Image (cartoon, rainbow, N blue to C red; front, top):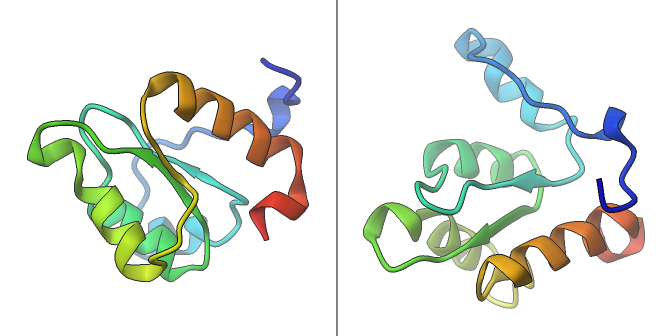
Amino acid sequence: MAGIEPWRIVVTSLLPPHREFLSKGVCDLFLDTPLFNAHTTAKDALWSGVPVLTVAGEGMASRGAASLTLMMDPAAVTIARNLCDYRDLAVKLASNASALA
């Protein structure tokens, strides 16, 4: 998987609300879905101090996480221009802890 150890990628199913919020804080990076952005889940990740990697699309549903990310950090480098950029940024950030800082 592009040089990323499989154990570092965690996909969770729906958790009870009190555990859902806490689970965000243990991540190094939140990978947003391109077509329908995370919106509230992205807000929870950002509020927990976890950077959100997203790509802003044309529709409203695909721009939510980018808007939230920019509100939190106007100089954010975690908003990809397109899907190729998204993949490259994901690999770069997951491979380089100092890039996440």
